[in-house]
Amino acid sequence: MSSLFRSISTLLTSRQLNATNTATLVLERLYYAEGRHDSSHPLHGKFNGLSVTEQA
Image (cartoon, rainbow, N blue to C red; front, side, top):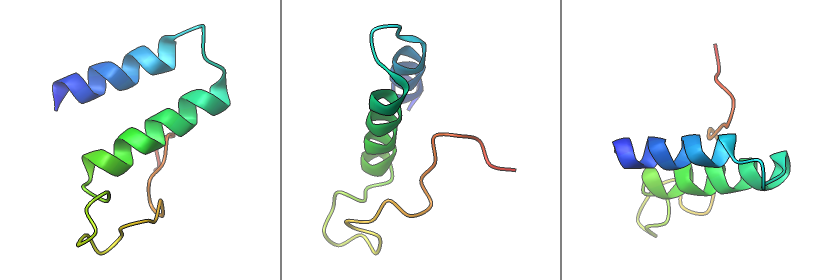
């Protein structure tokens, strides 16, 4: 799991990617990290509840 956070951190600090591309890549990684790519997951195909920003 720490490698996932390291990858996200690298994406967020990269100067080669713009904010939109970075946000999209982070959301995709969160989607896979939660297992939503599996068709048996109840939220398969949905990005609801995933967020790039920290929520209070």
